[in-house]
Length: 434
Image (cartoon, rainbow, N blue to C red; front, side):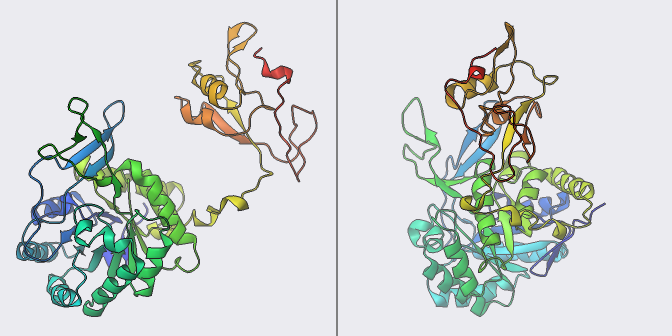
């Protein structure tokens, strides 16, 4: 079986799955249970200076459900730890003593005063923590106090505070980036300029989930009033993957190690993050929804995948997909794909025809010789794959490349290797369903 052991910044752990800084890592009891379940590491819930913040005593979470009530998105308005710094440090020290083979990272958030960093960094490091993670991403509550995303959105502030941490720390420093920016490369470059050892991303996305349909007030709310919060879970994974890939494929940022965060619910999500450049991954929402035992599915699934690919360790997967990411203008516009419907798998639901007919290119029939029948009209199909996306049967509709030499059914001639000139025609007789 593939070796899942992980080494990130010299920090060893039995697998690449860490718990992200969040409610699941708020106290020693939780982290101990996580390590008993098999998690490779944990980033402690963000520490601040005393006196501790005060969280709302009411609904902190908003949820986006699928039609079958599965959680696909999570919003929270919870702040950093609301327990005293001493209590947190004592528990971190004990956890590291009890679990020396697991990664324990201290997430911290401090004001823009060097003397505060000079005081707190050595104190926190004394717990035996393996690294710091600088929370420059939290978009709510703390950002209004000049911390969190208020720092992460200003590269100059990020660089200055990361430099302070590096100055007073002797362990690696990870900079956690906010996705609430227009260009993730700018804060990433600031972290590199500060000599940060790694970046982690993404933190949560600024959001409001919905309103209460009875009262027409924001939901969730505290005594009738609500606030924007941080969106996470499956819904943010595409945003995370884009930003990780941008850092991984850009020449001046590609060298910095990445801890991937955002929407990791099963092993496939971990593969996505790793293949696009992350060296390990952090999980929060899935643990909050399903509990710590999901680590079994994550590790088993990743191990089986590596075995199937003939890979012996996680590092062989890291960055595999990065060379395939490019800018739009570099895509091969001569390449042609066409949809193909497997008639043996088709259940004749008609969803492909409806969406193609209404909003796409009218390239799928709904009858043949008076019978209900769905088939792709090649010369009308532009290969957009909308039909694949809505089909409820896996692999019933697939995209097939039309290589050089294939027959163009519109002209009866072979497709040129230089240019595949597929066009649609309003008067084409095959436009009419037959």
